[in-house]
Length: 165
Image (cartoon, rainbow, N blue to C red; front, side, top):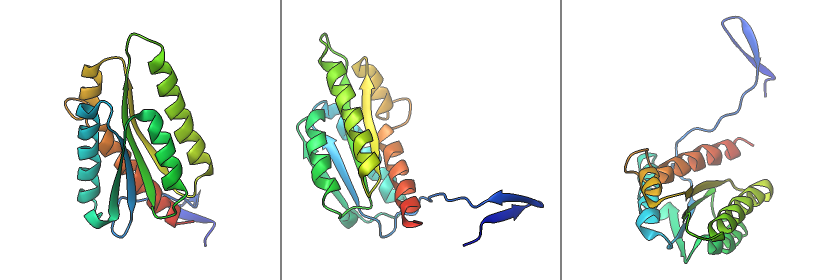
């Protein structure tokens, strides 16, 4: 492998970057059923992304769990299975009247970060943490794009980056 590359006479260090070709890659998608109006839209976005980038339907497995905390257990199962090139986590945690939101949002965020630090496969975070249902719907495809689609794009890129090492 070369130590560097040249462009316009300037020398640069070697760069590694994943692409978005999903052919032959296998993905696990964990989806929380809680707030399903939102999480189903996130799932639709993720599946749309994978399909557009040549991931065969036979290479996508969907794991449904009751809520965001249960996502953590499912993530542990999938992470230990060695059957995926990347794992996509989809959930929606919406602020309520109690402190529960803070606990759930913090714990799922910490868990995904911890798994990413020790996992052999990339795990992408398609978890909405919003103050209102309207904000969540907007991020699930009504106004501001679809965070499920974005999480799948990140999974594609990271799975391809991983293959380079």
